[in-house]
Image (cartoon, rainbow, N blue to C red; front, top):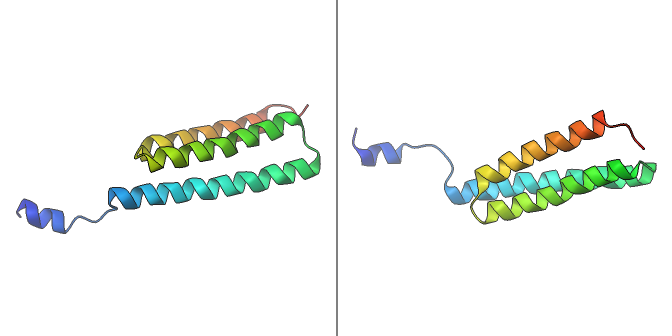
Length: 96
């Protein structure tokens, strides 16, 4: 098989599609964190919890910007690690 044939059969996302997909994932994550933050505000949760979810909201925006600039893999790694940390801290730390 020639290199031209191999490239023609390649199934995957183009870099532009990958950026858009990851920006979409980060936007959905941002919307979810915004909803959770509003619910927490309504429940009268602790300032610590609100701060954690606010941080996750800001983190989502940073990931969208990273993806827009072409740093999609780094952005997704930051998003996953950041959300895992935020959710873990919210579960582990006692509400004050």
